[in-house]
Image 1 (cartoon, helix red, strand yellow):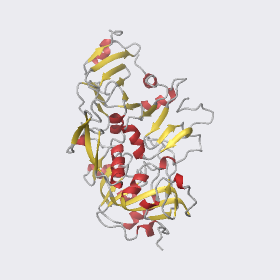
Image 2 (tube, chains in turn cyan, yellow; image 1 turned 90 degrees about the vertical axis):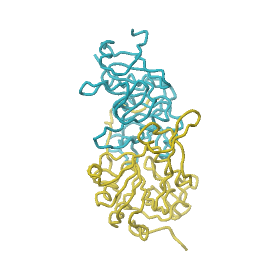
Image 3 (cartoon, each protein chain N blue to C red; image 1 turned 60 degrees about the horizontal axis):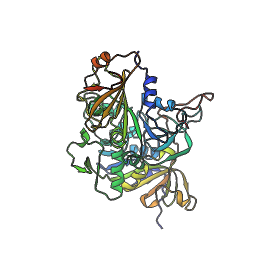
Image 4 (cartoon, rainbow over the protein chains, first blue to last red; image 1 turned 60 degrees about the vertical axis):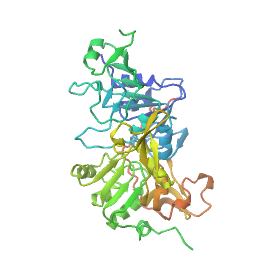
Length: 216
Length: 242
């Protein structure tokens, strides 16, 4: 059995460390907010200008002046702070955010990421994704292992326009997890989802990767 | 004695608008958007605008009004989703869009307002964003040169302002507004509460009045919420653990 969306988010949540400042992308990464392990403190950054993102407001208490980067209404916490977009991306570009968890369309074995446009389709824009992958020291991508057609998304070379080059440190799909050495050391399969065999993941992956000794 | 205070949005724009001008407007999505000024801009009918901002409104809201009125020829933005009119215009070649990474856009505006003509950033290196731009290595890493941005006119929205143009923003409605306030040849601010000097705490002012040439009290704020998300009262808190 491959991992569910929740299990993928839970695997990503295992990357959180006590004291981390973290930016979560939309989609599966957002679920990580509900899976922070007990006993560790994590402060969530929202790139539109907030640290210490709180939960959704109670019904009837939504404040239009308080949204996250996905335009959802949220709340503040006692330690929250607000700042401009320039300060926000200063935090991101300056390496002050410890971890970024975001979605992907394609990743390659060098850690290149494509997640912002498909040629021929309407381009919505990259938002903050290029800044996040360029500036945050550890980048985790959570995405489905293949296209609906079955085509692999973990590739030798990305065919879609890139968001960043050599930026992905960990790739989590429903089939397993790959550590990627973004300094040119290549990719290593470090975990398999329960019930997923090496044969299956190899047949659905285009990228070259080593297999961690505990899995071989 | 000169006064920065104007009675309303239309009056505050008098004498400032011309065809082909560049206008920056604050806001992230529909949060912290100068709603009154955008409607006055639409009503003015001024044409061939270049508009700089994180977004260009979304369906039926914000800068969408100016876009739908055919007044915009070029946009610099980081994200333009949820905007069918823009999508159609772009697909038909009826509008030019220059996509900027959000942090690069924020920094270009900050730099423009601070008199810095260009800077280097790692963001976008090796991507389409870097095409045609100067690149350079610092400490072994490649960077892309990006230029500062200024505008003929900046439109910002603040929570409170005083008659000297000092501004205080509220929560995430701050976003791009402080940098945009610094980068306009003329900056017009609309505020929810217009107060007398001394009523704002000098230590708490986000935008000093030097950056604001005209100010007025806005009315009839819609503050449309794009994605209303709530939780039932009984549910355990989600979102952040301690």
